[in-house]
Image (tube, rainbow, N blue to C red; front, side, top):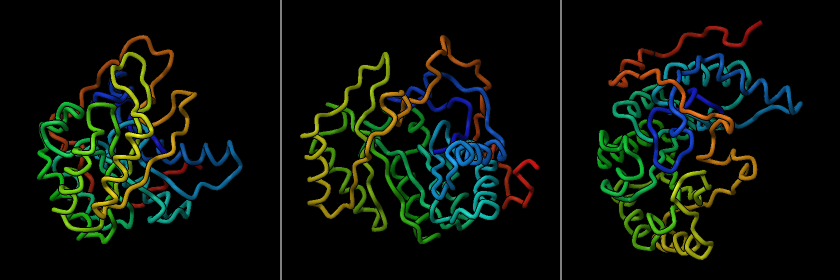
Length: 267
């Protein structure tokens, strides 16, 4: 996974990154350099990249597209081996679809209905679930690439069988080409959320599979180092980052047309 921003302005309620505040967007070459650093450190070629580390890719789409292009053309990482994630920012999924990339879109959903989603993802208030799902459907139709829905399971909040049934109905209403990636909650200091028991996780999986929804459960990695999904934050950070407020309109950050081909890798 690579980082797109220093911090994150969207502040999903379960995520440590948002609690640390937001400082700035990364530049395209800074995103690419993360991959180069990993290759240098481990003496191994990177073949998969997920734009899902820290920050919201759609709020830094110009740099993400530049990095994507460089990773594909210069580092020879296939487009189909890259995934771009988003919690959902109005008017950006359609913009991404217009580039017709052969990469998977991963949407952080976390709830099967608008009311519950707003309590988990505050930014959802500005992006109704119906509109988000329409954009996901259009992304699939435009690119032919499936959409993966990330769903963090929070004990007693969104992990009941009824939630799985509602989620299945939501996806079936949007047609095919979808996959659900379940992420059992990773503990964050100071959070009241709890990780579900294995039995509850399996019951959720069974409810989806019985309704013909393709589903997987993410294997937790980095838990012991507070580096698992939703845990990324500086352990020694006493106070939130000084806010560099992003524009209120996401389009102000999306000035990009198809990126030109600058050399993003320093000589």
